[in-house]
Length: 107
Image (tube, rainbow, N blue to C red):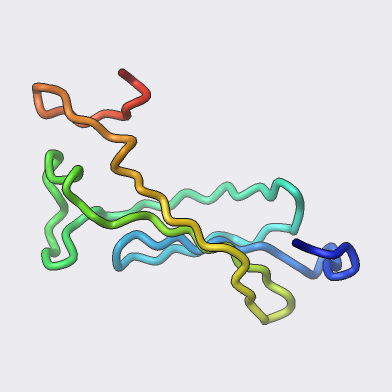
């Protein structure tokens, strides 16, 4: 991955970009490290791409927009894409017989 001579601590930073549908978010820069500490919180409005109205609760499971996480390395003003991860978040949700959506881990 990285050669120790490639990374100059203090000058090289990591930055995460989060993509949910047409919404884009960018984290604060953090120092490069084995376990970088990203503590940003992003609030996304979940909606169908063709509709500007937020989704009803039961429509969330039909939404086909994965979350994409892009990890960038920033040296001075240059950004280099290091990794992209797509997350299928709908598997974490389920609906009970009353139409309530909850995390599958609560079951």
